[in-house]
Length: 266
Image (tube, rainbow, N blue to C red; front, side, top):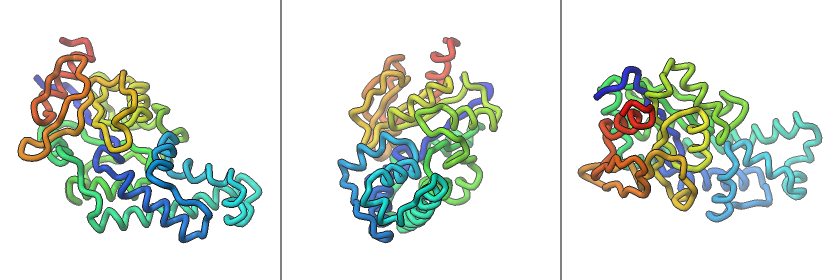
């Protein structure tokens, strides 16, 4: 069975690569050091910060700390505060993309396989993320190669005014690509991302990541440890309310079955 206008949308961080702990966290801390800010995030601190969608939004919260505010030059107006955050974020993004280029963040199991299979089968594949677009494109290229990555639309950063869990970025992606929501699936790793996708009316598969395994994924159509690879890491099913029962690795047939059930076409 095939879908009439099949779409497959991936989140970036935690989905294409397990980027948070080994990429974004050290990039944030390098930014704090570079700008001589009196803050460093531990692994646990950053886990709490991930509840806030978007890197700029996480950085903006630091200006509520008087010591950080003073170190930043006492920005008084909203415009001054926004300029400071933007400067920090540019440095952080460059640091992160350098880490990706250095190969310290390998793609998660099954990402290259499933994207390749979907493209070959005529699916529309896209990435929708709250991260900065250069960071997302770097991770995507690392996961599937520069040539394939160049063919995949990316919706990231400030393309929408509200970040996940708001569904705006998924609604934009579906509208811009002319996708049928009933035939479009999302791969996410966090509750915020799940809520954003479900809020846009999209069937969602969750591949849990290092920071998110214990989150609530009640609304997900399927929860797995990874997409899996037949010759590598096998997936473990954590929740399968529709009885899809993927074996070893998630396939396009599994995704089609999910969309069919969720769309009421079973």
